Length: 317
Image (cartoon, rainbow, N blue to C red):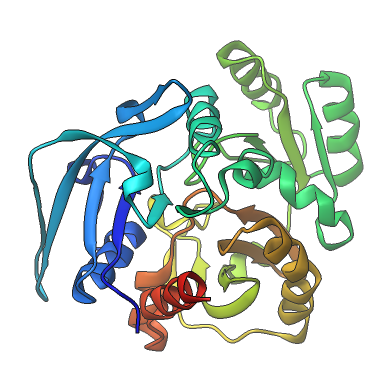
């Protein structure tokens, strides 16, 4: 029997989240139902003092009914994070230097405090780069700032997708058609905004049939949802109006999951969301994967229960 755990959620302020669909809220609510103590802190609350990790933490209380999701913060106090059994790293991207700094600090916690996901591996596994370890499962992809290389890629595939390397939620994603007069302007805008490379992929027509989000827990599939782009959109992200629908996994989907499973387990990437369009994986989300509320609604699979069953058993082993 697991004792009552002390859990600290590193996350964005709840008042900025859509609590009705937020995965972190669902995970925290399930922990609270199990009589675990849930606590909240933001990235800016992290402190490294004499190589010990502290944070300005407050107790969190959640309230959920059919029509309402509410929260209450208690008084903040600086505490050592070694006081907690689990630290849930659930801040949303962008995957920037602030995010990387948080992983460096959390990595200094001793192993008795379980950080999910493993901060060292999260730092080395940004969504759109980590997936390139499985290039045989991906659509044709380049990562570059070289305009000539992008032009040649476009000439080869005609329709392409251009997106920021460290973005999230479908922001900044462009479907550029053959002979699109906005091509040069789009690249100029990207290049003016930052010094990072772009990720450019062949456009997959199967996106019109949906973009599957599959959740893996310790490398094993626990649920999935299909996201259909709304009319006039090439993006299927629910943040930009993608419609979640119940889905079944194909043999190809299961093959892709099996191909990446061992790598996830080995790296301590316990809670992961992958995106599949047609026969191809496009992203491996390890920072703050979402989708469990939609999976629960459409498939009656309660992933938050599975998640805490797994964490409790791991801490007991």
